[in-house]
Image (cartoon, rainbow, N blue to C red):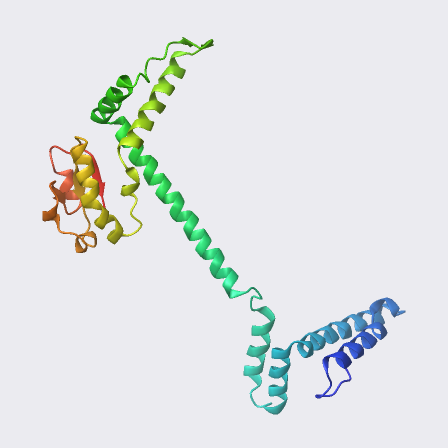
Length: 242
């Protein structure tokens, strides 16, 4: 670039533009001259990039003062050239956002699975149907308010009504503890609520969850693992797995 070590950025920029115009391939007459100019221009671009970046320029000055550390200089150069230029805070924010979305999707999936299980269980359906009948929600005819419904449509409406009642009468969100400690702390309250609604509850607790509550504080049976529960002859009642 025909500059000295003490020249400032403005002088370096001026020298670079002058040399870039002189050695531009389009100004060359022969193919060999153009190829040589392209190579020279690439070198000018690399030199300009290094000298205009404060950190890379410090590394270059260090190389001039310590030529014996050759391989270390190569490492510093390629680290600056190929390392990501993205702000670390942005990367962290994106990772946190993705994890939150994954956690939300997982919780919503667990909620729907729990609701589907309760909606298919005969005992829960009977309780929900009893409430719906008392409120007159199931008295829908095939032809109502000028609209004609097929058998499948009536079945879908009834299913939606029962699921809605179950979701309102049982706080399924308590099933969605983010960590073992949160789920375990919520378990006694959830068991009490389900029991008051007339449900039979069995709890499957991991060793980690048992660190946060005493099974003796619950009025229901607590299984220590899935294998123990699978050998129980009366399985099929609502299960809390924490």
